[in-house]
Length: 481
Image 1: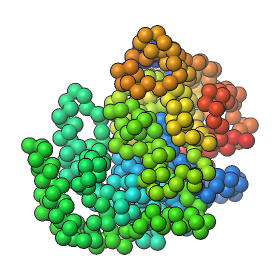
Image 2 (image 1 turned 180 degrees about the vertical axis):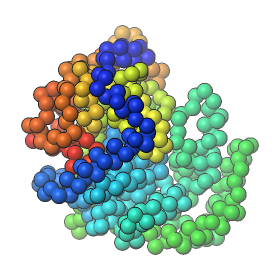
Image 3 (image 1 turned 90 degrees about the vertical axis):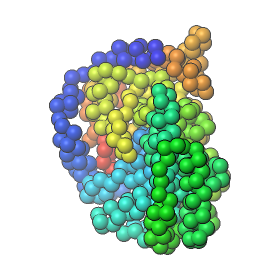
Image 4 (image 1 turned 60 degrees about the vertical axis):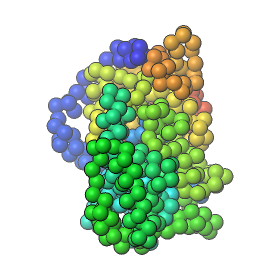
C-alpha cells in the first residue's frame, strides 16, 4: 500500500520510549502489573467520582469495538460492570479476549465468561449468539474459582440456544487454513468459523441438546461424519468425545437457561443490562474487510440477534476506539506503520493479543473506518483508549479520506479488498505532546496537544469522545465534561 510508505516515513519515533525495548518480556509484564496494582488500589480508595455519569447511561448499554478488535473494551466494561445488574456476551467465542483487573490489581484474562463476573451482584449471561467450547469454559471457571471468584448458576447462565464448539471444529479450522496456502485468513484456529458454519448449515449442536444424551450423541456422530467426508486428513475420536460430554453435561446443566426470556423479563422488571461486545465492527462478517473477518456480527445488529433484545431497548451505544489503530492477522490495513515507530508503539502499548499472544500490527487512527463503524452502530459516545501511548510523539496523523487507484478521493469505506490494498490515505497532521498523561484524571489536566487531538476526532466523527483512557488501571480514565 502506498499509504504505508507515506505514513511510516512521516514521523520519527522519539528515543524516550526505547528503554522498553531493553526490557525482557517478563520484566515488561512485571512493570505493567505494578502500574496496574497501584492504579487499581487508588481506584478502590477513592470515591466513585463518576457515579452520576455511569447512572446516566440508561438501562441498556452496549460497549462495542469500532476498529479491528483489541481496542480495550474490557476496561470500560470492567468499570460499568460494577454498575449493572446483568452483563451479557452476545456473539463470538473464545477468540475474543478481555483483560480485566480486580480492586487489588490482580489480572484476569477472560475469553467466554463475561467481564461482570468480578461484580458479585451481577448476573453474567452468555447469549444465544455465542459459540461455546465447554472444556474451555470450564477451564476459565476453574481458574476464576481458584482465585476466589464465586461462580454458580445464580452468577452465570448460558443460553440453551447457544451453539457448541467442539474439538472437531478446531481440527477443521486448521485444515481449512492449510488449504488456503498463501491466501490464509489468519484465524486464531480456535474453531470459531467452523462452529458458525455448522450453525448456518443447520447441523450444529446447541447447548440445550446436552440434556438429551441419545439425541446429542447422534448429532455429534453426524457432525463428525460430515467433516470426515469433507477432509481426507480429518482425525477425530467421536466416541471418546461423546463419553467426555456425558460428564460435561452434568456440570453445565445447572447453568443452562432460556436467556432470551430471562433477559427480557429482567429488563421489564427494571434491571440494568450491559452488553459486552467481542471482536469489532471492522471484523464483522457483513461489514468488515471480508474475507479477513470473524465469523459473527460484532456490530449492533449482532447484539440484538445474539441476545434477543429489541433495538428500541438500547439507550446507549458506546464505540471503543484506540487513539491509534491495531490489527492482528492478515487483511488490508490502510494506515499501517512499519519500522521503528511501529515497534516502539507496540512495545509501549503492550500490543500483543490477549487470546493468542500474537504481535499486533500498528497504524495511525483511521477516521474513514471509524465513521463507517459509527454509521453502522449509531454510536452515542466514543471511548478513546490508550491516549497515553502517544505521549512523546512530535506529531500525529489522522487518516481523513482515501485516494483510490483511479485518483478519486473518498470518505466511504470500500467493500473491495483489492481496492483497499491500493488506497493512499489522506492525512491530517497534528502536533503531539511531550507530557506523561498516565497519572492525569481530569480533562483540565491534559496538555493542550492532547485536548486538540481529542477535539479533532470529535470534529471529524461528529461523536463525543466522552471517555478517555490514559493508562492501564481501572481508574485511569478521564470523563470529558
